[in-house]
Length: 253
Ligand SMILES: [Zn+2]
Ligand SMILES: [Zn+2]
Image (cartoon, rainbow, N blue to C red; front, side, top):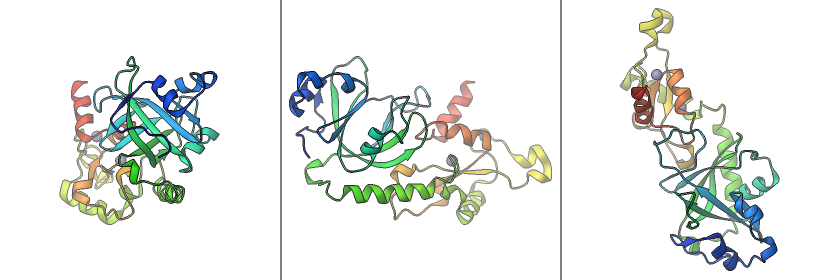
């Protein structure tokens, strides 16, 4: 690690200028916009929400070791500075705070890309590397490139991942759960008769950001039948809402 930040410690932007050696004329500006590149390192400052409280579409969430992060509203993954941040070529220092009025951010570690979405604002899931001393970034670029290739294979459409389309897994899931939507209870056969028989979407509960090359789908633990309406709403947020979160939202309506 190029700059000696300590995971879990608090830093104000002023502290960071000192540690990184940012001369006064280069301070503020881009540093206050959420992310910047300086001295061949990227610095991300994220305000994070609490999962399941607001249900906003674009909200940074920290779930386990993964930061689900949105860029500035005007940026997509194609703007040069984000391309560089995603490339694996530079170290990505991730700082978060839960209260946007607090001047201090917690250093969460170095980020390595595990998922992205070509939306506006850009979405990136960062795995947080906490044990930063033992991590060298010499081979990170290759790893990130491989990861991006893997992710491209899963992005056939925004809501239908290859796991949700796996016919064998789908069949096992439906044999177990039946054809009622697990969120709202909708059943196509009950409403439409014969033409609706055996029609339902299957939703994959596991975030792509947490899936590695060796992942094997578990049709009963990882998949649930949901109707297309509920399915679309589940995926309105990244990370997707949980079945229970959407059930709660529905119950409040
Ligand atoms: Zn439904
Ligand atoms: Zn789904």
